Length: 118
Image (cartoon, rainbow, N blue to C red; front, side, top):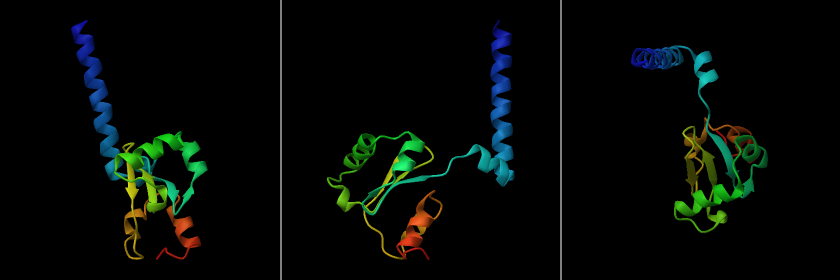
């Protein structure tokens, strides 16, 4: 019984190691296994499709804003759901500071439509 438990643990560790090794060497595997950050709020507009797809409520998003010390969504430029499940709240961006959002799903199209994407 103990041997079976140890064998099961060893198999799980081997699978974890194998998948991370493959993901670090193959962009296809990495894309398949890893999530991308998602834009939930941008310049006063809730991204309702993204909220629904990520199963995030507006209340959870507002709680993250409050937790980071903001009292109004009007003071927020963007809110991003990160790959680890945390929220990044960005207060304001200059035209040259948007590079941190370049890999965020949903940002490129919105930024291009408001002429801030470079």
